[in-house]
Length: 452
Image (cartoon, rainbow, N blue to C red; front, side, top):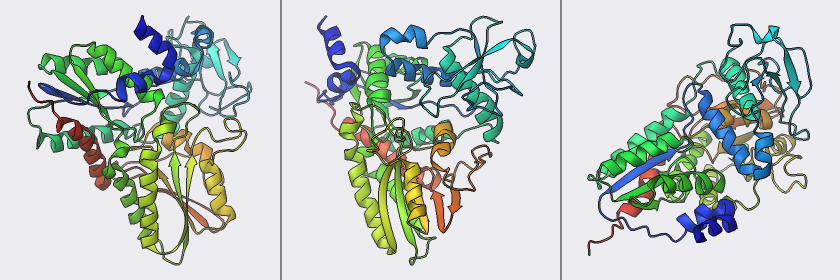
């Protein structure tokens, strides 16, 4: 009863206040490590996107709206040629969340009776409508989740990603392997497992395998989020693994990897390497972009400075060493537009680029400081919100990324300003990410509780 009351009082901050802050971080007995990332797969898998979007709405909506907003009324359909439509139109092609253009009987959706459903968030310019087909009954997921998955299947993977694959899972697996290699040097008797925290079955398998291996302590470490937040970590992943362990082993949570100097060094080295290609008589606006956060009381807002302040110090040192004229700004890719931030208290990445163009900087270097690898959000959804000031940016143009051992570098130009998207710390910069993941875990393992 008391535990239920604490859940009710603390809400989404329960994981931080109860499970993380101040918990005993001394391992006992045999230790097992879960190194986890979000879990976006390389190829398109509707289950991942449905699970993630379901969490978005489940987390952000009051419980009494769940049954209404998260209703499954049929099969949601998107036209890849007009995926962001807000008003009804005559479609040329209709795709469901599985990437199919036909119903169960093989009839094209275009020839079936469908109805237009307008955006649920009418004032949000980035919400869009969809077509609904009811001829085959329910679609297997809430309509609002299906429409996002259908957009990703038909437009992202169908038209914008030539390779039909994204780099997230590949890069995260590399980080896992390299971090484990580093940890085995000093902690060879430790068990290691990889998990995808958005997938409860993946987390369950990792927990059960560690328990079967005789682990007395399980250490959970997310390595893909430089800063931990309630939305993904304290209110999702940590309570999930806590529930799965269920007292069968001592459970310890590793801290956010952004507190490790190695992770900050990854982004600093990327900037230093870019600056080598820029003449010292140029002017540069360095844009340190963040994902963005709509929740006023998220624990992220209390702890982000532990990562971002020392990162900014190092970035300023790098810019000073370069020697030209420069300025540094922080920006948010999302939740900083007129809909989410009507009082304009935040600087959007869009406005950061506008600033570079208006003030006639020669270069605007953007570093996505909240991401360790490319994903569909960063490559496509965030891009279409922030690169519109550049006339050579086309949100409908494919985004080739064939070599995942090199950061995805994108350039745009407007007036005298060249914008350079620096990309994520992969390839030669991945070692820093792996060092940070290993360092977070090593701090705990080195503090092993002595036998009585």
